[in-house]
Length: 240
Length: 313
Image (cartoon, rainbow over all chains, first blue to last red; front, side, top):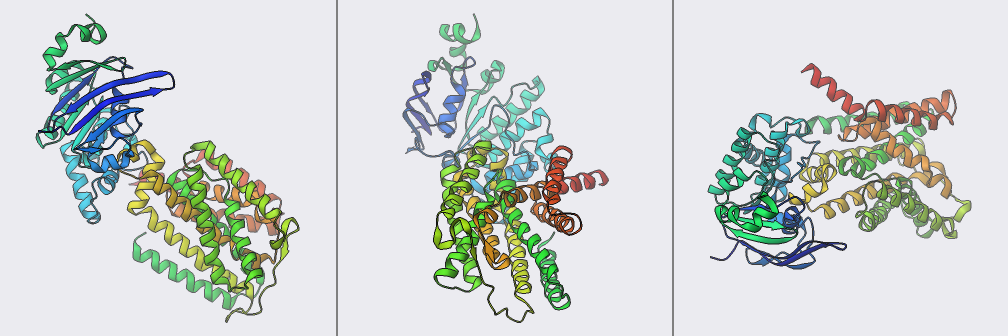
């Protein structure tokens, strides 16, 4: 089966600083991929290049067989790449429900009237456990609800690939379990998920495969157990 | 306000305007309301880019002036009727809005504001050196003899302005509650997140600058007939730009009603002060109100009202 996402020889430089180099990565349809690495290793830069928030300097990004390297982010979102942000970026002037209407109306093309978009948004909010907050202003949410809203908004775009950028940072153990539960549910519904996370216990439980980045290079790729046992990963990230 | 209520209110206002032209005799009333309505259109237009989309435009006076000078040019060149000139001014300023948007929308925040200010200066210099439309010394416009069934030309101008004002409010209102309006709000709140949610941010910003420009041009088009003498200093007056910013800020930028409320309040206060105290105090008043609102009620009157209702419910 061909890959859903293919990254080929990707490089990204900021001035003289090389943030990513020679990144080649395949993600299979329906896969749960964990992306780990120390701070500043290029994880977020990599997903910025995949979602289009940054353009890569070298290499190609292919999604469902289509070269999207030069596509602006909004077109990638329409093709089915959705992401959450490490630092939540809710649309602050809107209610929680309206936050979801934006991707529903723009990325998922739910043009079949107000009612349908609202029903669909409520459905996503129910899955995410945010239904009770629907009419609340998004700026006043708690930290955990804000992170759920990030995922909910990504979900509302009807993605084929969901990239979760540290959706669990700063959450308590029970809250981490809650978010993991949601991600498992989404994956079971056929959505491919790339998870960036520092909480190793969550990465180990969730991922079928783990990729470890260090200083802009992939230093290890394998099952969670293999990755944790890898000497390079231990030296660069886990601290042996 | 629900759809039917809004249209009923608009129709009622239009009828009231017509009745006003029949009942009132003093031409001052029509001049004063014309000035308020002109400021209202400018405020509503500014708010489409400034309030809904979050880009602060300091060059409103330039769009207004280009609208006015379009009329002057077309009058001198072809002698077209006023409705056609309004249309032409809207088109011309819409195009300038599109061009300015394309050139400057990669700039953010204060840089965008400076670019719009600079555009105003460039256009003013051009007009200053264009003798066909009067150059720096300005030009006179004769008021046409015909004024439909109205008693005077200024009564007709007042009605035209009322129609244009109601039209721009309707456009702004339709925009704010539509899919497009939500896209603009998403851009204002977070441009990267908007783009990643599928919003074509550049295209939407261009729509926003174009609509804003067109509306301001429309507001400026009847101006030469209203004042009968136009020079670059009065048409490109910074006070026009300041009013266009202050009125939405005072009324509240997040809702379509904000600039309307702000323009009616500040505009009427300015007229009253001009008559009772002095026309110089006008400027001071806007300044003081702006400072008070920005420090005490940054969400404007609409924001205060919302807070009040939330407490009660």
